[in-house]
Image (cartoon, rainbow, N blue to C red; front, side):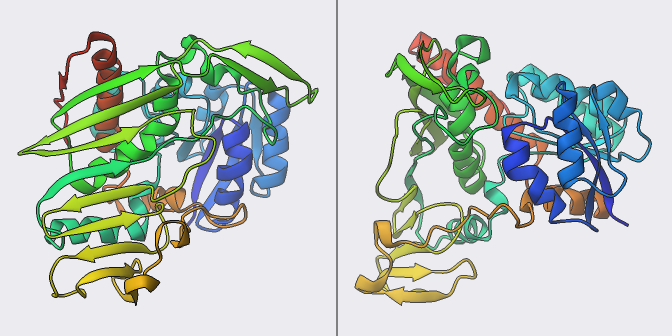
Length: 380
C-alpha cells in the first residue's frame, strides 16, 4: 500500500523539486491532496503531479480533515514551518518538513515532543545525511580511518536567489521579517546538518554575521521586470563549532558566493584527510600510511571502493559531484520518510537532529550579536 500524502505549499521548492520527485515515487508515495493559500496553485500542482483523484485545498484545515491523507509534506516558506507542522502532528499525520523545521529551540522541542507522544514519524530536510557518500564518509570517520578529527570545513553558501527561473518573488529571503541572518537559515543549514551528521552533536557555537551586499536587484517572476531593493537581513556569515577535546570546525552561511572553487567539505584528521565536492558522487581520501586504503591520495566511491589513486584521484574541480537529482528522479528524502512510516523505523533525517541544528542557528545569531560563545544543550 502506498503512503498517501498531502503537499502543503505549491511554490518554487514544491514545483521544482518535491512535487516531481514525489510523483516519481507513485505507487510507493501518492500525492492525494495539494494545498496552497493560492488555490489556483494547488489545483495546478494536483493536476500535474497528483494521483488520479487528487484533491486541491485552499487551507491546511481542509487538507487535514481529508481521511485519505496519512502524511503531510510541508514545503512553505520557513516562517510557517513550525505552526503548520504542529497542526499536522496534532491532526495525527506523519510529517516531512522543509528546512529549517522551526525557528527556535522552543518550537523544535514542541514538534519533537508532539511527534513522539503521538507515535508519528517526524522527518526534516535537508537530505544530506541519507546520501551514500555522506554515510560512507561518516563510517570512515567513525572507524578511525583518518584518526582523531582536528578540523572540519564546510562551504554552505551561494549568491542568493534573486534572478530568473523562479515561480515566486524571492525578496522575502533577504528581509529581517524572515529572520536576522537569513542566509544561515536558507543555506548554512545544509552544512550544519552535514558536519553534525558526521561528527555528532556539537557542544559550543560562536559566529560572525552581517550585511555584505546591501543593495540587490530582484526579478519579478510575473512581470520579468527587475527592481532594486535595500535588503535588511544578514546575508553573510560564518559559524564556528566546538565538539570538545580540540575538535573544531566552520560552516559558512552566506548569500555572497556567486561561484565557488574547491571542495565543499574537508575533514582533517591526525592520520588522513577527506575532501568532498558535494553530498553525492566520489570523494578524495588521503592516508598518511598504507593500510586499508593506499598511502597518499585516493578517489573513493560511495561503496568504499578505490577508483583512482595519485594524480588521477579527482582533484578539486575534477571531483565527481553528483548529489543533485534531476527533476524526474525520485525524491530520496521523501522515500526515506515514507519507508520509516511504513516500517516504523527512526529516520536518519530525524526531528532530533533538525532540533540540534535549529539550536545551533538560534544561538549562532546570539553569538554574533553578543560576541560570546554559546553552550549547546541538545543531542540526537
